Length: 346
Image 1 (cartoon, rainbow, N blue to C red):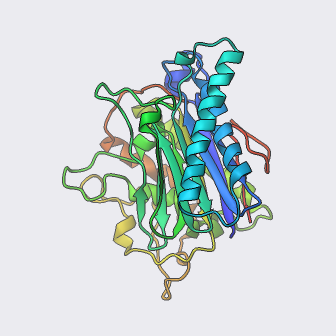
Image 2 (image 1 turned 90 degrees about the vertical axis):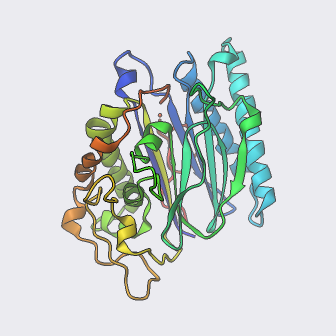
Image 3 (image 1 turned 60 degrees about the vertical axis):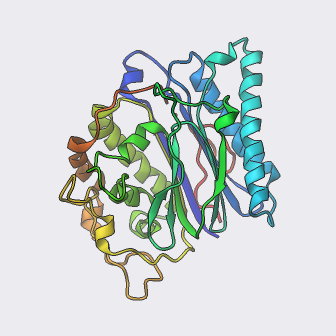
């Protein structure tokens, strides 16, 4: 199992304008059991200690799973472990608040946890961040849904009644976790009868393992190249696209298993539908090789060089929702930490 795992976060202009910290955090770790674990948290921006809560929760959830998972664990036992990891995050935030003499009511955060074991994906979810999975048939599916009350408020980690755990049915080639600043962007406005409410073209650009050879060519350190690529994409989106609409902090974490063969859908599946834009949002033409056992082989290197600059065409069709409440840090290669990343796990 060879998995590339990396993430990036950036503060939103609605936060930097008033001197607020980025309240998003993420954590990624490989394990002795051959699993890759990732967590993304979005501190609730209306809370005074949201950044602390998201940092503590993301680290606690990943560290719990990394300590508990065993090579033979599958099915319900992994789901139960993730539930306990969410509980560990709950307790860790509560303890951190007590130690700092913070009111727990001002330490709220969302939490999404993904555990990729071979090509099996397990997850935990609370709040309005979310997770997408790319399966071996080339389809990309949201596996969580935003959890908000009737007034639009987010259900936080401290609300155990809304915790969800589960397993994805099918072989998973890639996973994307994002906070709601990007989640909203992955769901541009579509016609009411649209089959897919999410932007498959944009998600494919971030998730598809088939792009790895192009993004890592001419380098001795593919993991560093992938991290640099993601940082560049996120910076462009943050400055030119997302912030014009949302102004929220944005975070994306990507896990890509290069050993899962993908039988891609027809090219049209990865194009921006005509009900909101005529051209492909990431400017990439994909070609599936005849055997349909490996990633696309006819990628146009020149067009891949500056992909994000074609993404801003989607700005006109994104719902102009006001920025809610959120925010994102960095770590050493093999140790989990808030806002950190582990790359090229084998």
